[in-house]
Length: 524
Image 1 (cartoon, rainbow, N blue to C red):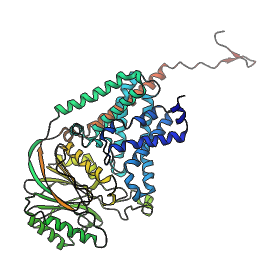
Image 2 (image 1 turned 180 degrees about the vertical axis):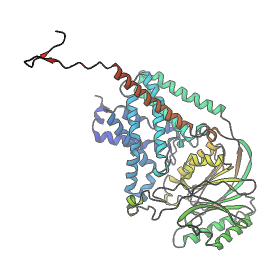
Image 3 (image 1 turned 90 degrees about the vertical axis):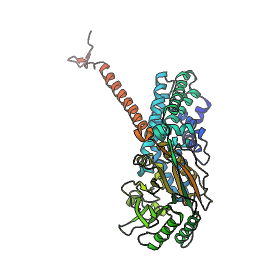
């Protein structure tokens, strides 16, 4: 047994190594943003699962690695959810147990070239299934998808327009599997190198042949970021600061002004004075103002978070109610069972209510926008639907005031680059407290970020584009392809089991016995 094998023989040391290996990919995301590290970050985890003595241990390595990954990408939640952060990470980490088992099955021992070739398809497909399941809003949503680490890489953004963030995740895992084979199985370099070449060829083909967004003019969009305002009467003080910053936009010829999430803490139907003040601002800057109301509604029960458009004559009637709420932050799943989370962290004391449909708003100047609120910008299907419904600009109204000193604001802002590249539509990420950012139709950054310490307004010349990206047209096809690959694997296993049963020798009859009870051997 090798020295590393001796060291990993301890279940505790092996478990700690699995947790650490699973946490490594977090360095590829903002704030470190080592995008290049994503292509090798899974290698230690793959090598560990590959070396597991049994399939059950490999599944356990997958679970512990998943726990490490989920804890790392959500570490900024710990001050708010405390121990519950680790409970959630342990539950969701179990999704990687089958993936760990698959790693050992295809790469364990001395695999044949055929097994390695299959691993280059099956393991990325298995990873995509984990990302798909945990992307369900009830399980926390698609935060920290591996492909989203490539938000600032132009070739990767180009690929996102073809197959979304899912295609990026698939290709990143392909590279990790190939590197793991090159490191641990030097006699099997040919299929590993072939996998790397195939990934490079596919990426290059997409770069060359995928349609590019067609430039279609520009619009001037202003972002108002008031910064952190705490203390008593913070709602009134924040509104006054937003009002002051918006007045400074007069004469700058803007087409739309966007305020951040929870920028208005009062129902505007109940506060016509506030609605009138926003309308006066709209007349001053000669543009509609998109605010975000976080309040109990007057026309129906419950608290809603809503994007509300206000024009020079007051409320326009165009409104979007947030559909996908943040678990524990805005509602508690199965509150009757998990309501105790409010006693150990800053979980929602009262559940917010959900909207029922997405909305594309006409804001004048020939411009139509598709609003999303907070972590809805993490869901590729929502921005895709808005683009398909005719939105010329995607907008995310957000607030990360609770997590200002963490990696969360920068990571949240980076997601808008992926959504822009996927849809071929520019995206404005406007926050209450930063980071605010704007991206063009190809995912390229427009202007400067407004950091977490900024209390200001900024005007961006946002490039528009026409045309439909392959991702908007064909949707999540990498996910369906991965499902097909795994279905073929299951079918092949089923056929192998059936053929094995057919080849099994017929059972021999029991030996006959004499009158004295002694067995008689057939054929003698």
